[in-house]
Image 1 (cartoon, rainbow, N blue to C red):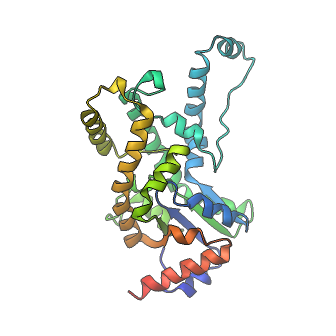
Image 2 (image 1 turned 120 degrees about the horizontal axis):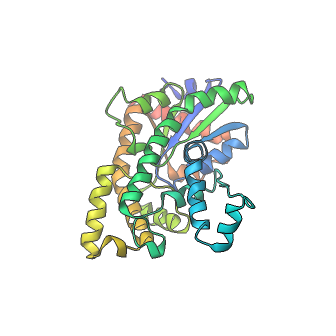
Image 3 (image 1 turned 90 degrees about the vertical axis):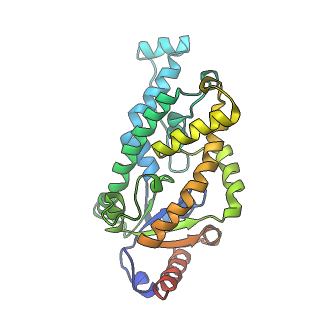
Length: 288
C-alpha cells in the first residue's frame, strides 16, 4: 500500500501500518507510543510465541523441570502447572525455546535440534504475518480500534523475496497496511549487539545462511560443535545477520514501502509525531 502524497496518508481515516527492521531499532517502542493513543498493537513475535509455538515452548519448560527430582514429582502428580508468560516487551520464552547450538553443558542445542526449531519458527512466522489482515478486522469489529500497527518480526526479510511481486507474505501485508522500515545507521551495530547481549531476541536464520555460518564459526574457532559456547555463537551470528539483513530490508522498503530512520523514532512521543514524520517520508519518496 502506497500513497500519492503525505496528505493522502494523513487523510486515511483508519490507518494500518507494518513496521519492520532489525531487532532493537525501536519497532516495539514505537508501537507502545501508539498504543497509548488507542492504536491496536499486533506483535508477530508475540503471536508466534502464543498461538503457534506456545505448546512447544511450554513442553520445553517441562523437559527442563523433569530434570529436577522435586519438580518431576510435582509434575507427574499434577501438583503444579507450567506456563509461558510471554509479553510484547518480553519475548524471553520464545528466545529460550529457539536457543542456540553448542555445548549441552551450557544449555546449547544439537545443530540438528536447532535447525528443527528454526523450521518451526519459519512456518509460524509466515502464518502469523499473513494473519495481520484478519487481526485488523478483529481490532475494529470486536474492540472498536480505528488504527492498527503490526510490529513485524526482525526476521521478516528472511521469509520474503522483495523482488517477487507475487510474494505471498509481502502481498498480504501490502494489501492492508503501509510498510515502514526503521533503519538503524551502520555505525549503530555495536549498540544493537550490546542490546542483544543484554536482552536476547528470537533469532531466525535463512537455512542456507545458517549452514554457512555454522561451518564458518567452527572453522574459524577450530572447535567441535559440542564445544561451542552457545551464547558466543548467538552474538556472533547476530552480528552476521545485521550485515546480511540490511540490504534486504532496504529492498523491501524501496519496492514495497517507506523508510524512517532509527534516530527519528527516539523523537516520536505521540501518534501525531509519527503521522507527520511518515507523511514527510511519503512526500519525499513520491517526488523522487
